[in-house]
Each structure stands twice: as structure tokens, then as C-alpha cells.
Image (cartoon, rainbow, N blue to C red; front, side, top):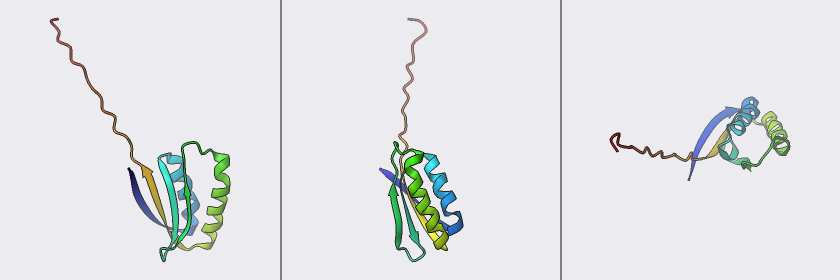
Length: 94
């Protein structure tokens, strides 16, 4: 199951915020909408994506940032799996 977040941001800070989100590593999908709610750009992220493959996406986000005033970033994150640890208790007198 995924969790979703939204950030309202001004166009100049858009590229910086997208780079921060990508660096976090647990983001599955990023969608950018304008202030009217119309989807402008959407791109999925996978674990295997490396810097060279992201360059065209980041270039498009940078161009978009120059054109947009106010926008919203919708982020879909993967839920972190909770690790259950079991502690084995051994009696001292055995």
C-alpha cells in the first residue's frame, strides 16, 4: 500500500523539490498539477532508475518550472515495511 502527500510550491522551487524527492528513494510516482488542478506532468520512479535516465525528466521539470507560477506536487510513496524482531530468551539455569 502506498501513502500520498501533496506540496504546494512556486515554480522556481519546483526542480529543487523534485530532486529532493527523488533523492529520498522511497518515492514511487510524482505528479505535477497546476493551480486549477489540471495534471501537467506525471512520471513513475523505480528503484533501478539512475541519474542518466532521469536527466530528460529533470530537464522537462526545469522547463515546466519556468512556465508555471503556482503548482502542486503529488507524491506517492512506498510504505516502509516494519521489521519485526524476535528476541529469544534463554533460561540461565539450563
